[in-house]
Amino acid sequence: MMNMKNMKNIIKLSLAGFIAVMLLLPVSCTKDLLDQKPTTEVDQNVFWKTADDATLALQGAYADIRPCFDRDYYLDGHGEWVRCRGTSVTSNNLRLGDAYQGGSFNNPSSYASSFDKMYRYLYGGINRANYVIDNVKKMYSTVPASSVGALDIIIAEARTLRALCYFKLISMWGDVPYIGHTIYNNSEVENIKRVPIAQVKDSIMADLNHAFNVIPVKPVATGRLTKPGVLALRGKVQLYWACWNNFGWPELSGFTPGATEATAAYTAAAADFKSVIDNYGLTLFRNGEPGEIDVPGKADKLPNYYYLFTPVANGDAEFLLAFTHGATGTNQGEELMRDFAGRNHEGSQVWLCPRYEIADRYQTLSTGDFAPPLVQMN
Image (cartoon, rainbow, N blue to C red; front, side, top):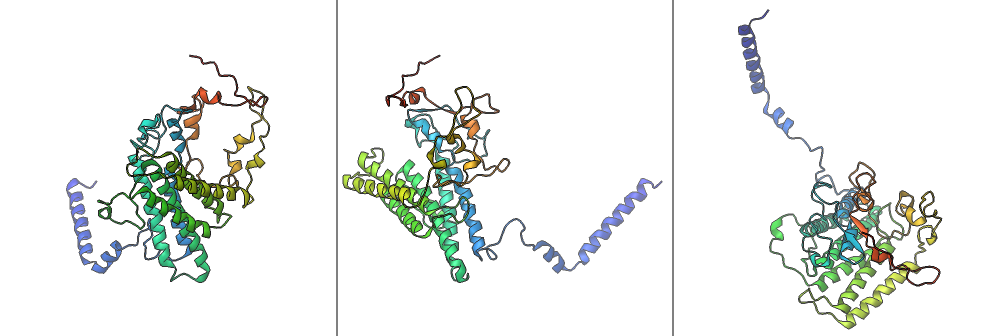
């Protein structure tokens, strides 16, 4: 057997030989070995060349902005009809960094008091949309004429996403900073000032007016925006603006409501909504029919309203503006069951539930009057 002394000598010789070989290697070989192109990221020098590149970037913007809107039903807890006893958007239940984390949803007085993450993520979405807009604009001089139409639509969709983010910002905070270009360094916005809400609203409307004239009636692909969807969003912005001017916004210093402004916005909103209803051949899911339903206590037959929330309704015309979600295991689904279902369903928590008062507001088909009030139990 080899003794330990001989083994140590062999190891020393091996190490010495390895070092000698490394020293003799040409420097250029070492440089080539280290100077590798990244395999997990695409360099800008080779990206932004084709309409497919621009489409991929737009899809990234959709994915980045979607989490700022996927749980707005929590805000119903600020009203009188829904109880929000908690949320699934905590660090223990959902991915860290969710835009809804930390928010208070169970009474109106706390509205927007703890939504710093929502504020930050909305501006992140705006920057992502600006990034698409700015880079796609540079492509016009290099792409073939056949790609120009696709680029026009991509910019219009990105502008709609930007408008959507700003609409939520002014709905929650009123006057907010407006950023219309890509930010690459935080120093650019460290001391940025808030802009009056009316000015931000005008920028939102400019984006939506442009998008309405460019985006087609039918989506380019599943989950992409449509002309009636943009029109419905524009109507909603105008409806909110009308209400703020009609009823005032006392918490927002510097905002002066105006009756004339309110009337004009109400009129414009009604026209947009009427156009959505009348001009695009849209129908309600399964023509709005209620469908069949089982007797109380059974659930073999479920109404059409149930199927509206299942994959059966994917891509249905009733969804004017909706974000797509992935399937199980993609980290893109909503935890709707956890939020709404009772505790006998897997990990459900019934975080949100209707208060009994809302049932008392239902009207009976036979008389048209309100149903008899429910009798409360412990």
